Length: 450
Ligand SMILES: *Cc1c(COP(=O)(O)O)cnc(C)c1O
Image: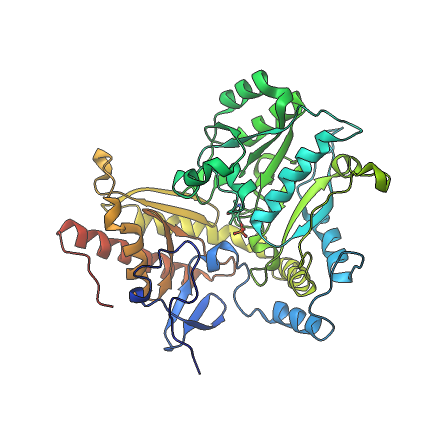
């Protein structure tokens, strides 16, 4: 018995007016990179179920790990209790986290793991920890209450993470609810130097999505910027928070994007791919120095007063441990290099030549294809045409799920995708872009039957 779509379920990031008419597929099952709906149609999951699936759906090893945990216990609190999946996962995460080069003496390694359950809360935790750290001994510097963040940043949808966000479409309305943060242009090392020079001792932390700003439309930062940000933070005694919720777990070709520049942040926020894309789980990794700033007697009130009911859910931790095992056993990262090269070739031959493709931006397996009405003259499509969305409808009818950010078509397949499937995904995407943009060029109307 399958329920049909009505609007009782209010969907995320969705204008519910007209939603039913879009006849979204009801997904019933998945296998590898494929999803099957209740009508039996198959779709290639070109967005990794919104950037989180890593090794494919129903991976036997991860399935077995979750089942085996389910036979023990599905959930227990971690307030006053602990469990071995969370303990072991914390140690494993520290082992794979970006590490300081031996030369970089004095820079603390990431050594402590604080769990939560979404990317937004992982960032929220980093912001609150950074803020609180400066308010209390041993390093108290109570003037450090502000944050620096990047224009076009996306760090999640809770009010703290929105405060350091910079996507006007999602964020500007909420301005009155938010705390201020200094904004600099992504990649602008001089701008950052300037803010830190003038306001350094007001700043608790600088927050960045390292290397790639995902929700901004897969925008790449110039190489060297992250390194510069790290050096400037050190010079001014400011923490660096790296939000690797999107970029983590192999998405850019390395386990973490920070590794491209040999940078170790003071806070590393991870989510999405952490559980292999199976269950909601996130974590904020930090250093011994930060951790020690919270130690004290109970009455000192240095405790980090933050936690969620499902913090470190055992099923999610079991999935995450199994996902890390799969990374090792299947040598996921080693085998990714060839697929990344193929991905680049396919995009160059099939997508870049299309007349309405303005730019293809990519790092590893994170790709954004920017569409424009007239790329040569820099003319965008009328927003009302919803060209990015039209492309996703075309792709759906051809058997692939892709999701746009405005007029940027995002491709972010699971790392486990085979070369043949990758080719199929890029072909479908190219055909869909051609079909949708040709229709617009010939002035056809865009009404679709329900
Ligand atoms: C998706 C995302 C988040 C938010 O994660 P949720 O799990 O959706 O709360 C935060 N930061 C970045 C960079 C993201 O891509």
